[in-house]
Picture (tube, rainbow, N blue to C red):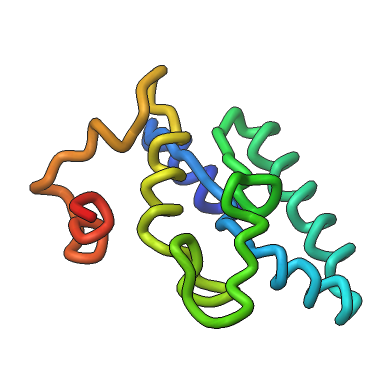
Length: 123
C-alpha cells in the first residue's frame, strides 16, 4: 500500500480508498473466531497510513444503514449473502464518496465504466 501511495504522489495522482461494508453476521463471525481485534487494528493502521499521506479513506465496514440487515435466510434487498452487498449498497457508497465536494456517483462518465460498474449505476 505504501508503494501505491508513493507512486501516486510521485505522479500527482489523487487516490481515494474505502473499506468494504460488512454485514453484522460477518462481524459476529469474526468476533466468534477471535479475529475481530486484528481486523480493527488493521483498519486503524490503514487509516493512519492514509492520514499520514493526505489520502482520503472511507470506512464502510460497520455502522452503516445496511449493517443490521442480517441476510439470515439468503439474499435480502441489501445483501446477496453475508459477505456480498447488493447494488443498492454499492450506489449508497458511491453517493457517500466525495470528489471535490460532490458525490462521485453523479460524476461517473459512462465511457469509463466497466461492465460491472455500468450494471451498478443503472440498477
